[in-house]
Length: 161
Image: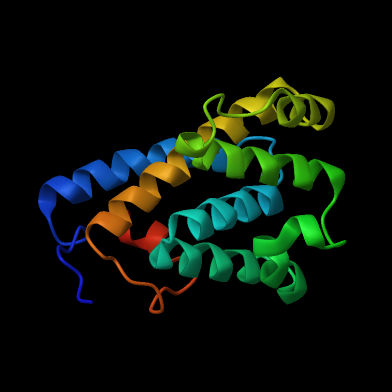
């Protein structure tokens, strides 16, 4: 499967990507822990089958010091012992927020209660915005068949300078 369209070389797409990345910077600079940000982005990307984003967030997390064990277990976080209760709440929100068509009520009250238990209002705002943003990014990459494997840590940020 070849990439259908190079979003990185199109002027309009590049202008959009810069604004998209600026929205991402608001989240990146938020009090939501960086490890949680990468784990949530990775899990949503796994659900959505986005090779480009899985590649990016796995490598960015590893470059930031995330352990290989935790990265390998994100897909099966419910069946593992390496995530904190707060991270588990964030991962549940990522899953339920990514699978909206699978559940008529979207995010469950139970998941929302766990998120409220572990995060303050600014962290929740960042978490909700992150789930929306990564799902949008996944859709952009999947639509054009942007394939994973060639990403290098810091590459996306450098492309937007």
